[in-house]
Length: 282
Image (tube, rainbow, N blue to C red):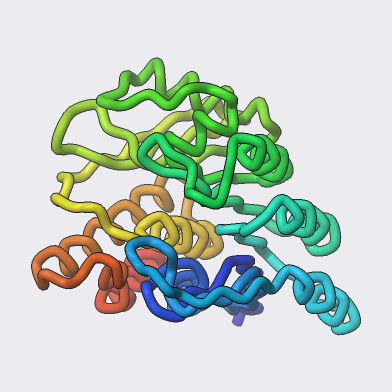
């Protein structure tokens, strides 16, 4: 039997609200991978739509965790990073890439902005620094807002053109990443999805599905985790991006039909069995 692959996930823990590690850990693990975690912060809830949440910064714990792991001679097949709360954490993650990244697939989700705006705790200088981290990754998974800001461009509202999207992805490769998965892409109202670009083959792909009304927290994390899970199970970039789109759409649809308070994230749990079957061709 092949040795089980090990993924390092570097995210915050929002104890309620289904995002970051509370989605990455179950999604990656359910598909047969070992998921080891480094928490960058611990919050009682995520920050979208909630007030009064608690926040504990874990910056001072990250490198000691890495130090201990090195004494165990741990090796990782992938390193997957998400929300980072400060420029200091960006520099620390670069060090993690150096320490544990030899032979590992490095996937960075620059979670910092959406809908044309930076998250309140960040500024454009942070976007520039996040771009430097993405330059050290093999695959990056920005939305269009994050892509524009890392490139120092003004955000542009859709619908988009293929020329715009493909120029954006080629420019992102100029930061250093070899492959791009761009989310929030649409060419017509009512259809939303993702695009991929591989700079080594110049191949581009698109996946679109019907848009479901509303704004749903945590879907970017669900998407990126499913993407990583598919990639580490041997699926191609194009297939992985498409599988992740379908999984997110199914999670949103269950949440929409149930009328659940969207602050609590999407119902990804009830789709885990089907996701595993699709990814592992069971």
